[in-house]
Structure formats: structure tokens, C-alpha cells
Amino acid sequence: MENSFTDQVAAHALALKGYALFLTQNRDDAHDLLQETYLKAFSNRERFAPDTNLKGWLYTIMKNTFINNYRRKIKRNTFSDQTEQDYYINQPSQHIPNQAESKMVMEDLNAAIAKLPFELREAFMLNFRGHKYQDIADQFGIPIGTVKTRIHLARKALKRKLSVYGDLYGLNAA
Image (tube, rainbow, N blue to C red; front, side, top):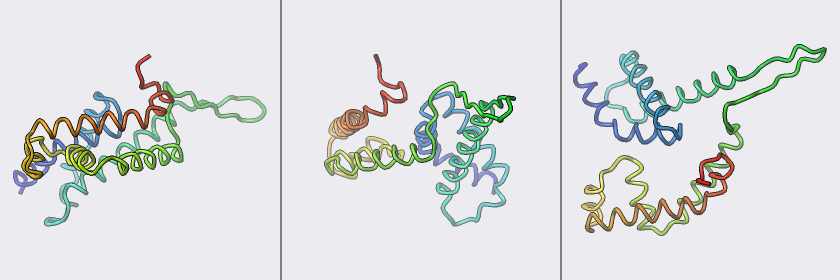
């Protein structure tokens, strides 16, 4: 059972890495989140119901871990001012979006993806979900170079459409 579970989890490693990077926007943080997700998954493997969606279960663990870490970070960066009225000052090390702002970013991202031409959108989404270039090429019956070009063009279009967020979060090169 343990080897089977390990093999099943390993089959989703690439998709989990991509999702961790998507959530954290930082390679080191993504690696830490991935390790924490694996630890929680293996520690709680008896809670996983066989013949159900393992990838969804792992994504849920990762998302919840990310949210908990985010809340801890906010709490750690909040200080109390001991004046007559208790003021709370949040001093994050960098801009951390609030829930409403994050929702707005995701809505804009989803809208930008939806506006991509079908060929670019499908290649991009399959790649985002962890499919290899060759698998995408085989699925569409096109050369691998065409797949790479479509993914590159999709990323370029998304970067252009969402550049305002890069400016806001300091992600665009000066």
C-alpha cells in the first residue's frame, strides 16, 4: 500500500511543483510548500479514500497549507502599538495582497486566459497542468516546436495583459 501510495503521489509531482510555484511566486517558497504538502499527505495517507481524486486531495492540502502559512506570516508581521487606543500596524516584508485583491487578480488572470486564441489557451493550460510538450504535440497532432511557440506566445500575451500586477507587486524589471 505504501509503495503504491508513494508511486501515485510521485505521478503528480510535476503538477504539484507548478501549482506551488503558481501560489508562492518564488522557487524557494514553492519548494518548501511542496515538501510540507508531501509531509502532510504521507502523515495523513490513511485519510485518503482509495479510488478517489488523489490529485485534487493533494492540491487541497497544498492550498490549505499555503493559506495557513500566509496567515501565520501576516500574524507574525503585525505589531501592537501600546498607546491609549490599541493600533495594529501590519508591516509585511513585501506587498501581500488581501483576499479581495487576490480574487480580483485571479478573475483578471482567468479572463486574460479565456481571451487567448483557442490554440494558445489549450497548449498553455495543458502545460500549466503538467503535461509535457511531447504529450501536447501528440494530442493536437502538431510538431513539438509549434507547441513551444504557442506556449511562449500565450505567456507573452498574459504577461502583457497582466503587466499592471507586475508593476504593483514589483515583479517587472526596471
